[in-house]
Length: 277
Picture 1 (cartoon, rainbow, N blue to C red):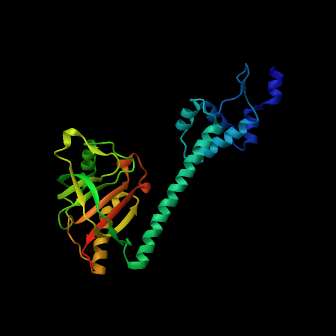
Picture 2: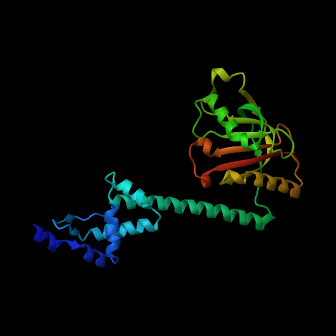
Picture 3: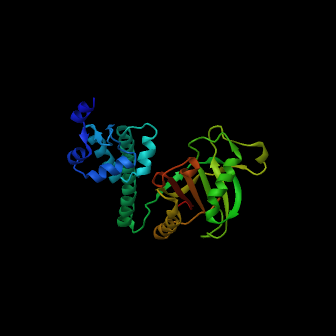
């Protein structure tokens, strides 16, 4: 049996030569438990199957893709083959490519807007139909908004997966250190207020209005900057805020309120009610 093994298998040196690497590298991955020999004789000589060269090349590629040794070992410890591991990483790479493409498109949109009107935003003027909301009143900093929305979510039942949350800014002007806000959700589906919160959560109707709107796809960290750009747009066009029921609305169509999301996947809508012509 040993003669057959020596004939059909590769020594560490032979394996390293065919794999175009060093004997020391092969021994390193053996020691790490990632690429172990197929056979070890009584003298502790180690032998590899020729097809393990493919596994070795897969390991090198995964390392170039920044997969850590610990991650590779962890997955192999779960009886995951290198082939399965590579396929999984390939999916992650494809996801990363899609993510970068979304970022590229968003960035190109900003450049396009700048070339068109000198602003980061290219808003649209829309007639917004009346709709019903459920909301709570809050006063705090803009950084409190996430916590305020989460408060509201805890007061509701049967929230649809595609729920649209929002903040209505009630004060005039930019007041990041302390502002009066209405935090709400567009009422649709079977969403309802839990019994214990019926006195706090109010139902109201947003009247039909003319709105200057801009949809932002990307990080929420840019929202304050984009709001300033919206104000510049109003100045350039001569449009005036109506202050009919609020100063501005910030709607959350798809973000962390809808579960774990990549920043580049998030969708926000900035809407400014303006006076009718």
